[in-house]
Image 1 (cartoon, rainbow, N blue to C red):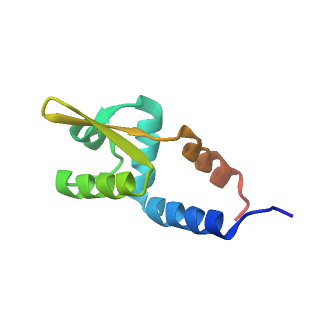
Image 2 (image 1 turned 60 degrees about the vertical axis):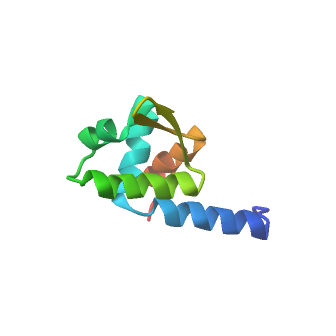
Length: 98
């Protein structure tokens, strides 16, 4: 049996709700590969057409939930993943028989 506290379950739920969107999963995939990127660089690599304002909203939500961090460099904001372990979810989901 897996031992997980109630607070861990709540945190996991928040994380899963946050990434439960195709654009956000694509953002994680892109940042996992390239590590540090600006909004416009992320937008160029997305698998879908996403307005920059919409993309920025996704990035802010992910940052607010602690999945991403950002650093201001001049007039650009560089985004990166806080903990690369989150990207293990891709392999986990690919291996799931659901």
